[in-house]
Each structure stands twice: as C-alpha cells, then as structure tokens.
Amino acid sequence: MELSYEQEQATVEQLRSGKARVDVELSKVIVGQKEAVEQLLIALFAGGHCLLTGAPGLAKTLLVKSIAQVFHLKFQRVQFTPDLMPADITGTEILQDAGDGRRALTFVRGPVFTNVLLADEINRTPPKTQAALLEAMQEHQVTAAGVRYPLDEPFFVLATQNPIEMEGTYPLPEAQLDRFMFNTVIDYLPEDDEVAVVKQTTSRRPDPIEPLFTGDDVLRFHEIVRRVPVAEEIIRYAVRLAAVSRPSQAGAPAFVKQWVSWGAGTRAAQYLILGAKARALLAGRVHATAEDIRQLALPVLRHRVLVNYRAEAEGVTVDQVIARLIEQVPGPVEGNK
Image (cartoon, rainbow, N blue to C red):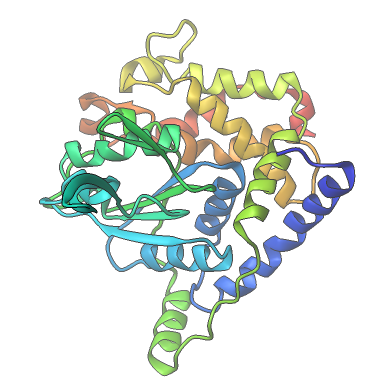
C-alpha cells in the first residue's frame, strides 16, 4: 500500500491519538490488564498474531472480541475441542447441484475466512487440528484440493490457551508457537480491580463499544509501523538477545547452557523489532529504542525458549531465564539514554 507524505502523517497522528480512545472503549468492559491490552494492540498494529495464556475466567475471550469491535473487523470464534477437525476451521468441499442435472464439488469456506479469528482454548485440541492454522497464519491463505484461497486482509489469529499443566490440554507444536508474535500472560487481577469487575458485571449492562477504525486503517498502520526507523545498534541488540538464548550459541551464558534445551530463532528478533516500532509510535516517538526491545522481550521470547528438566527440577521458569538474559545482555548506549 503506497501512501503519500500527507497520508503518512495523517495515519501516524491517527495511530497516536487512537491509543487513548481505544483504552476508553475497552474500559467499558475490561478492567485492568493494561499490559495485555498494550501487547494486543502492538501485535495488531505490527500485523502479528497473539497467544493469550491464562486460567479460565480471566476475560481473555472478552478482550479479543472487544478489540475486534473497536477496530470494526469481521470476527469469528472457534471453540477448540478434542473432536474438532481441520476442515471445521479451514472449510471443506461438498457436493452441490451445478444445474442441468450435474453435480460438482464446491468449497465452503470455514471460519478462518475472517479478519480476527479467535481460536478459543487452542490447546484443547490435538496437534493435527492445531496445525490446520499454520498455512493461514504464515501465508494468509488456505489450500484445499490443490486450490489456494486467499484470506481477507487484515487477518489475525488471537488464540487463548489454558496453562499446559491443566488436565485435558495438548502442548502446541513448536512450529506453530513460533508463528505467534507474542505470548501474553493474563494473570489474576489485584483485589481492587477484581472488586470493580464484580460490581461492573453484576449491576448493569455495559455500554456498547463504538468502532473507531476500519480494516483499511489497520492496513495503513501496518505500512506506517514498518517505516519507523531503527538504528543498526538496536537491531543488533535484538538479534543478540535472541541468539544468546540458544545453548549451542557461542557466547551463551552459563545459565542458558544449564537450563535451556532450545532457544529462540531469527523470527524472535524480527518480532522484537516490529514490536518496538509499533510501541514507539504508540508512545508518540518516531524511532525505536533499546527500552522498547527490553519491554517486549518477555512476550516475544517466552514461547520460543524451552527450559529443560534440570530447570524444572530447580524451580526455574522461562520468565526467570529471560529476565536474566535482559540483565546480562548489554544494550546500545543510545537506547539507554
């Protein structure tokens, strides 16, 4: 999408001013969870998919649906269950009457043909069905009987999952996890916020959410985010942060070799930079900094770094490993000012 200089400036201003308006609309139904909301918005503005992890009842589904309403995007929800089949997501061919007594196979599109696909409790279904989303997430298309069907743009997969240790869940394949830009953890609210949720949801119906943007606005945001300048030192910092999470990498810290069985790939660095660009624009800046990288390191890396049995035995979590990486990997001087 080619934008003139005037269109570019108008889009930047629309994106900057839109953050506060989005917060106002979401506050009608969502209390707290500011960090999760910010990460979801960054993913949408950068054109990435997002995985929301948290226990049942923490408004993960409501948050995704509300954001789709704010951006006036087509929304489909799929409840993932153990008996869900790939065709239930992508679509299937059925035999229909083509006229003149003839019958022909016709492709009936599944719920993936939308703007925002909510894959609810994605880890409740076996890997074969989870993998049905891979082509859609990476190529924004579905292939059926050798025919490619492009998806609507913009297209996002916002998936929710319950913690893996809960009964009846299946770990997501690593190849699919890597397609998610962020793994955003939604935790229980502080007591005051939880009281506000109970009061708000038991006293009256919430005010309707007003749409603020369109799909075309979101596509322009994608273009603007990619135009945000990033110094080479910041890019090298993102690459270095991802690289040292690999135990086989030369120069990896001793604790990585001790606790990590698999580290982050190049896609992690790409998403760190894209996320930093979007975060900078939301903060009213026209350039990304090392602090943007540090703030997004947890959601970008936590589903790409796999700790080993020794770490689990010693009670060391992925978040703790990433926090130590952030402490030990030096950032560029310019990003620390």
